[in-house]
Length: 83
Image 1 (cartoon, helix red, strand yellow):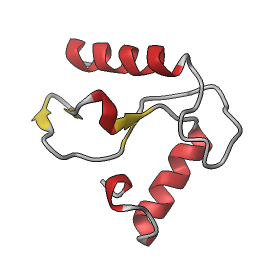
Image 2: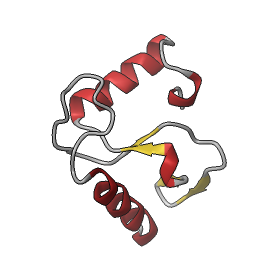
Image 3: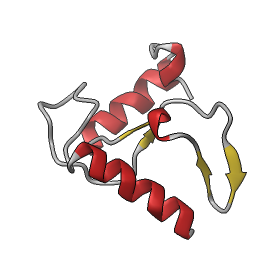
Image 4: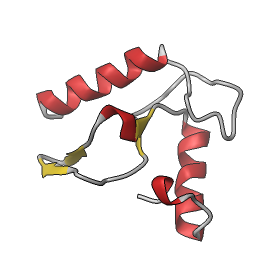
């Protein structure tokens, strides 16, 4: 993982205090992975990931991350979630 991506992930984990911010499938589970991109607007393409502003990222547990992805696939996601 590129150092800038690592710093971004640490900032988001610190903001969430390690708990799921999405809470769409849980009651605040501990996070277990990288933050979910709400949008790729104004993204910097590089390394292996897209870096976006912190407000475009949400720290989430695996069940909530999977729900974000399901909604995106099925077209149920609000526009800002559909990235």
